[in-house]
Length: 363
Image (cartoon, rainbow, N blue to C red; front, side):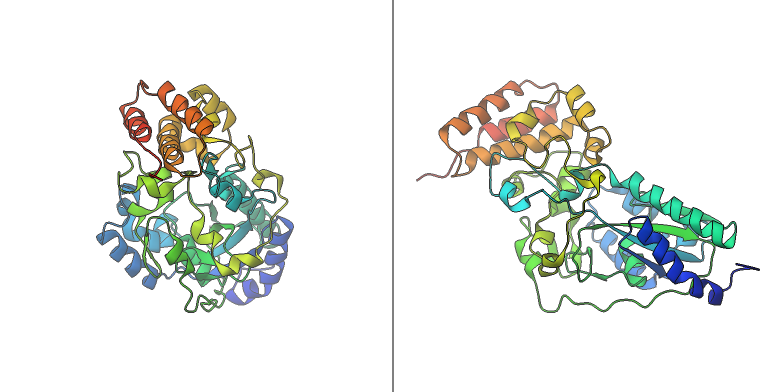
């Protein structure tokens, strides 16, 4: 592209960038404004209410999230990208219905998406450099104070669902990534909201964490409790976790728009180590070295072995209390818990003792 890029010349280049994105595996590419005043007000209100729990980094960055040029000086445009991830073979409903099986969020069954998305965005930037010459950019994928949903919404990639995730007509099983650029791309038109009067995601949430449409209290969210939260899981919420050991997908599983989602064949996002069919007992037996080796390259690895055991202990206790658990399974569950009763971690010991105290309902 000869001369200095202008909004007009960059607008004309958008179809080519979308095509390059498709060639890299992205399902959609959009262009967003860096002005996020409405999102900033909602964020500050959410933080003031303490809905972020002990995610101190959310409050630490605060309003900076709504100002891309503070994070990367010189940013005047944002390229937002969507990468679908729904695995082909993972049957969520079957696993959730089996109390002795372990449920991990669908996004975490394969390889860590952070690096995959960033690498593809970097390749997209390289292709754009070939077309127009050098420009400043930085790639993000849920790895910095970036308001991904607000930016993607502004880029026309979807609308914010009542569960607070980005949603579009083929569902919500996708990752988001961004290129902050010093190029003045004209923003795309936002997409209208199509949730209507549906409240399925609100109604299904096991812990009632969606406290109002478009408002999530992380302190009650199973994804927060099993991933971000470092301490003891609140006693009153433990029974509600069921067999969910890492994250929760209930609000997505029930969303009517996800009936139109298409599973992907991307090898990186297919289940590894049998995590889509593993039993609680088998995973609870993993020593720390096994945990680290098996989950190399997995997003689950970041919570560490201690929290892994904490989460599994809660699930084992819930399995003991489940009326569908037979006597033989109950014996195996108790034996697994007793094997960790003297664990060096006080956090693990406390959750194990709680689990051992769980009983099925009286007939």
